[in-house]
Length: 72
Image (cartoon, rainbow, N blue to C red; front, side, top):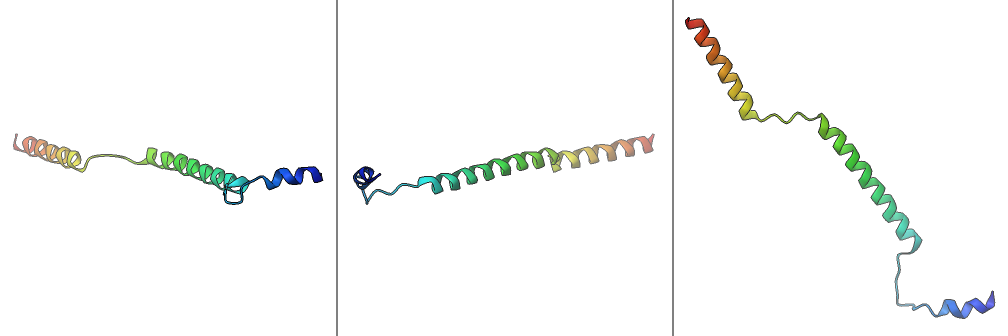
């Protein structure tokens, strides 16, 4: 075991690496983003994207149909 000590000292002290802790933090963040995206897609499927202008157009058309039916 003592013969491995000189090999460990060859590592540059000025070099900074993220190591295992950095990988774990990155993996947890990636899983959190994946979960948030999956949840967002689920919620977005429930949203009804109707244009307010098209709703007012259909209401005005229904109102004009009722007026024409009442006149005749």
